[in-house]
Image (cartoon, rainbow, N blue to C red; front, side):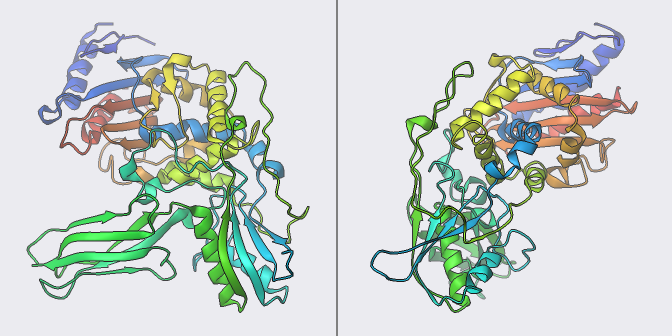
Length: 495
């Protein structure tokens, strides 16, 4: 393969031919936007062997946003058999606890780290209602409490470096071994009939877990939506304030749950009561973080975790089969599902530890080391990309892609990725370009950062590996993806 060397504000393409100079000008034009001055770009393009074709600041470290999910999903595919085995994948279970004073028993709803547990009308598998049916079949008419137990993982609901402003919405929901419906509730906002009147805010059916404080006003039809949603940390009240115009369509929002074990137990209580079983109260059971949840360095032996043991029976009284981890991995990639990614990280943390974030991160580091990535090429603090502390260099990301291309699970992993102009988070990108249907890549968006890494099919039919990252977007710019996509289209057209 002919190699090029090209310099463009740090852009290096290896040899100085007329073709290279032309590509330099075109890539420079694609990445240039006078309104976005100050963006720091990183880019590496290589063939399937990892041989580099084009590089821009290849060893600089960038915030990868949801490109972090590439680490998580690849590590999961590498360990898929172990992750799906019963010791690491117990599913959601019911245990019965007797009460000393002779009152009705307590039902312990114990989470198994299953991201696919649902309580929705269209649920087909891993349905919370199926557990309620099993309990109802016992013929009991009263329980003193439903205990939401998420002790499979330690109680660490968010990761280091998460932004507080993200915690209100679906993408910043809390992490728990006992989770249902992606740990979100749905709310509808409907303008009033005339300007000057109140707007209407209402929970969708069965979602009234929080209290509502509606301070929204309806304005004239010429106005714009100027609405804000606020839920303070630890509060059970969601406040809606601002102005929305009359005559506009209703909008729906997904709001994050702060204590998923409590929320799941609350929904289970409602299901039991709908089946004629009286439930006294909802309580939660968590496992606080301990020193044994901190993973040792890779070259030191694993510490034995001293887990709190509760007096539950040896076997579950009712259980659901574990949900499909493969289906969850597909959602992580196609839809950039944060909760599923961080639950996968916790499940990785069960392989050699107590299911903590730190042990999950240790598994990611071990995987990346085995893939040949240098230690200085990345920093990882979670599974989803929500942490502003995560870092990766474009070269390291492409090295990882080249390693993955040699693994037996690569084609399955690649099929999970969004396809340009077709589905997932790339459905509306690359439409009408030569890369429509020919780019398979994970997106990434965070404050000041955009990323895209994966595989594209060039004009020649060759598969190219690539990683392009944009950081330090200036204030007032929502995205750098137009420039990013234009550059990739231009590069694919030359090979």
